[in-house]
Structures are given as structure tokens and as C-alpha cells.
Length: 209
Image (cartoon, rainbow, N blue to C red; front, side, top):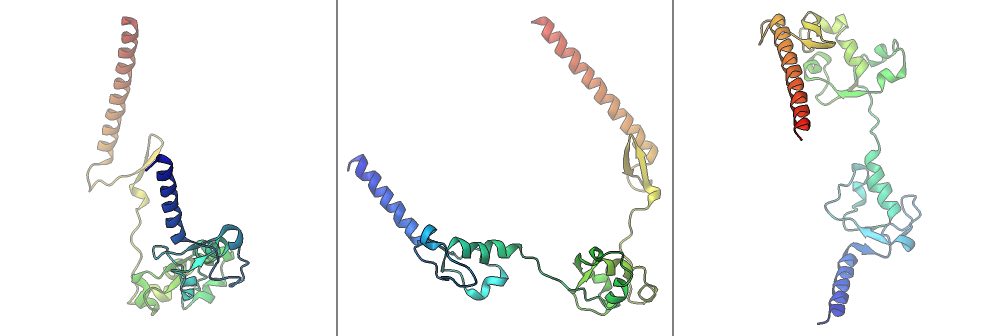
């Protein structure tokens, strides 16, 4: 078999493979408010390895041929659509009335487990961050026997500034503040000496040549 025949056979085999993935027509022709461009660019079959967004699963897209516009709308861009959550905190309206701006109620999180019993809501319920912060300041909830406080944050008394940086220091853990500063100075002096030695060695090497 000549090289030219082999090349043609390889090309035909490649086109055959492409044919399994390509189609001339979109299976959702002019549906879902999209004007297809399959006559110009063709259509591609959706494999079972493609992650179908929840908003498009009812269309049963796996195995169907989609034009570029349908693919972008139903798969690519559908993944970027954000879910519009609603705060389910019992006192959301009360807390919202004192909010300085609407942005304080636009960020949502799942209710922490420590507040599930206190708020009497189900696990996985979404609440806004403002309601989360206000709950920990609300005497009604704080006095409740089911209330659990948030994890303790690092106290300011343990934060020290040294060489223009902030460090968390606690005498009851690994080292004291004085030990840390002593070790830091030793390390810095060691680095300076090492740099000087490298510089001197480099200059002597140049002079030797």
C-alpha cells in the first residue's frame, strides 16, 4: 500500500470517528427560544461524560445533537446561573429593617449546626449572613438553653507585632514570646551572614578567573 493510500485511509477513518460525534442537524431545532446555527456549524452529540445542569436535565440531552447556540445556552451558560436563595431565619424581616444596605442580605450560607435547635429550623436551611451575625447578638437566642456560641476567635492579647508583621503567640503552646523573638533574630543574623559569605565567595571566584 502506497503512502498516499495510507494517508487517505487514515483521513477516512478520522472522518468516520468525527461522524460519530457530529451531526448535520440539531435535535432541538429552533426550540427553547434559540435560533439554531447548525446549518453553518453543524451539531455535536452530547456524551454521557458531559455534566448536565439541573435546569436542563428535564430535556434529556445525553445522546442528542445540539448546535453551538443550544449547547451554550443549555449546558455552558446554564452552569453559571446562580440560584436565588431566600433567607429562612425566623426573624429575618426584623433584622432586615435595621440593615444599612441591601448587600448585607445578599450573601447566604447554610445554617450552622450549632443554631439548628435554637432557631428550630431544618439542617441545610439557607440564611443570610446578617441574620447569622444578629443571632449571636440577640438576647432572645443567646439566653436560650439550645444556643451554642460560635467558635472562640483568637484573642487580641495573643497577637504581637514583630518586624512589621503580626504573629499569634501563646505561652502555653510551643514557645513564649521572648523565645520566638530570640529565635527570629538568630535566623535573620544567620541569613545575613550566609548572604555575605555567598557574595564574598562569588567575588573571589571571579577574581580567580
